[in-house]
Image (cartoon, rainbow, N blue to C red; front, side, top):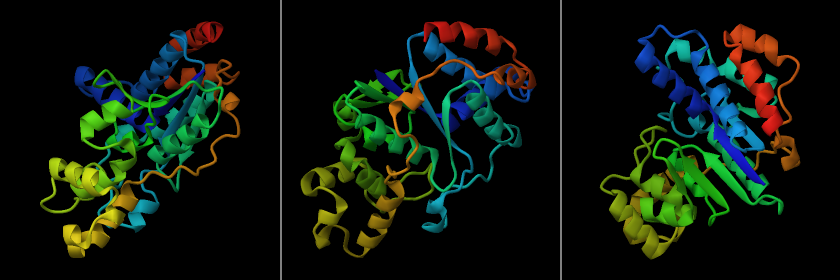
Amino acid sequence: MIVHLIDGTYELFRQFYGIRRFSKGEEGPFAAVNGVLHSVLQMFETGATHIGVATDHVIESFRNGMWADYKTGAGIDPALRRQFAALEEGLEAMGVAVWPMVELEADDGLASAAHLASQDESVQRVSIWTPDKDLAQCVRGNRVVQVDRRANQVRDADAVKEKFGVEPVLIPDFLALVGDAADGFPGIPRIGKVTAARLLNQHGPIEDFPDSELGERRELALLFKDLATLRTDARLFDSVDELRWLGPTAEFESHAERLGDTRLVKRSHEASVVA
């Protein structure tokens, strides 16, 4: 089987701003949620059987206590923020495994789920659906891959190395050195992508760098690496069988009505026959 892990927060953002470009702000209050639900149903219609979705139930996480400038929920469009809970409720009613993350982030949820699923010998491949460069650290050979829907690419370990210049396991070190503007930490001054890749390929992880390379910046680099390292110890499920979709729950029809898209009901029942 193939286990598909979806970044629900990214998908909600993608749908929200994609729809808004065409609707000019006149979309329905749950248009982005409905867009995500339809995209998940499309995956079932085209053969997916096991899907899990991680969401940022709250934007802030334990990392905000580690670095004052780490990303927060400030600036999120209120119309988008109001759809976070509705997405989680809609997925659950549709019968999809969903993990609302609180202390951890959705990326940690995906990393933990990938770690758990890849340990099951019945799993042929784990596909992590997100373009987020953080998740590249989870890629393992061609068994755990990253699906970048935006670039229409599937990245195995070789593709990650080609894109970033380092092996997947060194992605946290790479991000620590070059920074991650989306997450709010700047990296180490005067170290760009090429230099970072060269140093990491020469010395290995930051912990193995000679003192002459970073000097007094070493501790800051290690802090940024800790920020960039995804946690894999969240116990989200006991068996991958829990991710198998068995169709919508009895409550899904009423949820679809509240979301203003009853097409979801017919489509979900038809997709359950395929799955």
